Image (cartoon, rainbow, N blue to C red; front, side):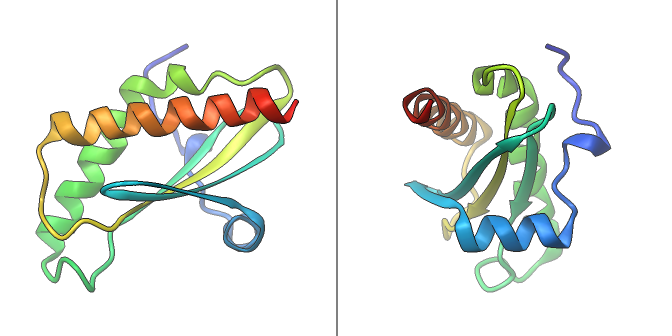
Length: 123
């Protein structure tokens, strides 16, 4: 699996985001609240959100989003689902502090492993 994060892998569609929020399964693993939904397709799609309520300065929000996207990009191989099945995933950073990259990466790995396990159980 390539270690890129292309435009096709970003969750941008308004209808897909609404569907994810309404019908998705929530998972909590501090500092993230993760919502995911399985669908048929070929590419997993990801959305990263850092609320302005917790981080007023755009510099801090962008720093956290970059860290989350990079940790996902390097570890997206963990989210290897069976052929024809993919996932829409939304990471919402709910922590109040700016955490180190290594901590964020370890939590992203945990979340991706849990999502993979849930996909195996649902089939």
